[in-house]
Length: 315
Ligand SMILES: Nc1nc2c(ncn2[C@@H]2O[C@H](COP(=O)(O)OP(=O)(O)OP(=O)(O)O)[C@@H](O)[C@H]2O)c(=O)[nH]1
Ligand SMILES: [Mg+2]
Image 1 (tube, rainbow, N blue to C red):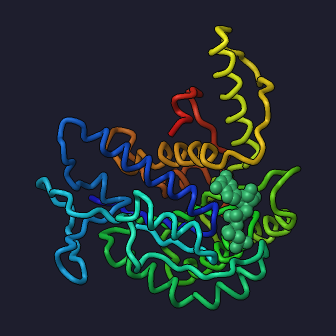
Image 2: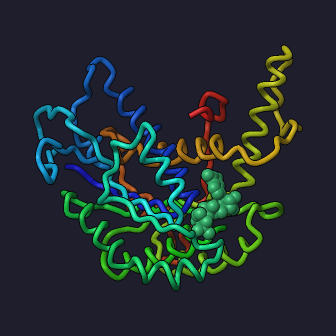
Image 3: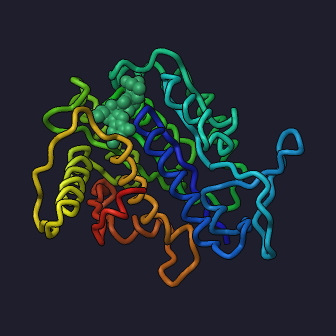
């Protein structure tokens, strides 16, 4: 039986991590179906994707069935929100553009100016109906909606402010559907955004109250992994043995967001694979919460990834 999950990507970081996630998920499903040139649309794919027949207007939904259903046109079960247009526009022009249609995204021009309040108090209420409409559209195509999966950063204004607002909305409108958040925390010391501590703190209050489970990822930790990998690669190239502890590679100017998001996407892929694929370990996101959350507000899980190898990080 399909167990669907709707992803909500908010802000620049949320959409960039989301982009990596979809790319890797498609690659993983294609690899799992190796042998068949055109993988069929099955329950595994239907948890994060819809299959639609675009020959009709509006496109007609093709449900996964017991027999093999060919893929017509895959759409991600996702709602994209950003109060700047740049990242979403890039996504819609890129190789993943077919995964999303105009019913799935909301953008504005000016951004939330790295201000939680601008996102939560202005853009949230402004787009509240539009957001609910898009979520409803996605929810109606689900057979058994299991959870909302939010991707956002806490340091800016949109991911944190509008993201928090959306969580409150979902809590009101879909109280029985689990809200699972992947929240990217800013660097403690040198973050690009001066207001990031305030934005994070204000979001944390909402996350504690309105999310069922939060997977915090810290930008500094992601950066450390990248630097460690670079130091491994450099030493391996020089013909030395791999180091066992943190190596001191050169710090590049700017943050390698693409690679950092690759790690986050890999982690999410692993976390959701038990829900996406059949198998003895088959569990859904709700069960993770049931097993690991002792009290309702104590729902911040620490994530780790093993084995730790550079091939894993290149996703
Ligand atoms: N890991 C990661 N962090 C990012 C990325 N983009 C931005 N960040 C971090 O996210 C925080 C800034 O949040 P953004 O997502 O850029 O802001 P936003 O949600 O778009 O909000 P506004 O721009 O204010 O409307 C800072 O801590 C950045 O370091 C990304 O692609 N990957
Ligand atoms: Mg932005």
